[in-house]
Length: 185
Ligand SMILES: [Zn+2]
Image (cartoon, rainbow, N blue to C red; front, side, top):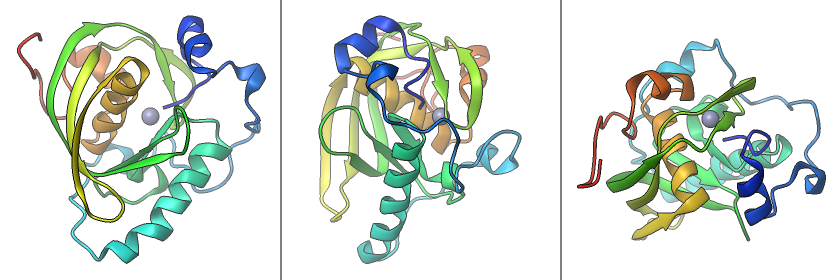
């Protein structure tokens, strides 16, 4: 997910004001963009050796950072595996084989996407999500996320199921292939 198109109030809350970003204007190689059909495929679970993750995650962190993103799915670097990374505050974090457990409180915060440059959309996103995943060492984790974290996780989970933000505008509330989830949908 791009940080350039986030609402001003979110940028100010999270230190994402573009004036503070060192992201270059141009997009380095490795970032898959529309109309590339790879963005429309559902990604597969990662079942390989954990040591094979590190080169992919490092590439994802690099592409996300070089393009000024707050989130990136593996399919956006041409690897259709169920993995995404976030860079919201502190160190970048990775989420392997994420599974959405619940999502609540739909709203329309507005956003952009590194793979859909120069466009802005306002699809419905959850204010709170509950997620389980594996970290880069293979340890199972779960947790609740809110605000920009929940927003970005929903965006990346859509990527993992081959959906772009303009698709979510049409589909309505939901995350990935799940049309509705959680008791507050
Ligand atoms: Zn995106």
